[in-house]
Image (tube, rainbow, N blue to C red; front, top):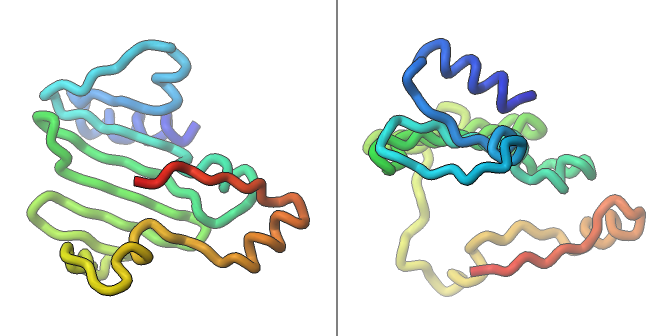
Amino acid sequence: MVEKLLMNGISAKFPDHKFIGEENTAESNRRVELTDAPTWIIDPVDGTMNFVHAMPHTCISIALYVNKVAEIGIVYNPVIEQFFTARKGKGAFLNGQRIRVSDEKGGDFDALSRRVLCAASSELAHQATQVLVQYYPDRD
């Protein structure tokens, strides 16, 4: 439903743009290829398991690719009201405030600073109430 709403709104402004969406791709069971045409890629519920279990780490994720290059990225977490936007060559923003990436070289705690969201006691408490099922994704 969210995906269709977004696609309809974008199509009204940009009728020639293409779409790759998690829901419409799954429904049609077809393989989709990114072309040079302006294409919106939409994940209407990124973090589905978190959403199902009422965990706050879920979002709507949207990107615009032109000539197979990302031009615009949007990530919105309605639970904690975070709205991230980025445009190629124009910077990135969180709720309208400019943000910057951390130093690419890293530091003493670099291995710990990448892709870690954890609060062990909270996770264990949620697991005990069967709200959270432990899942260990492969990390790069």
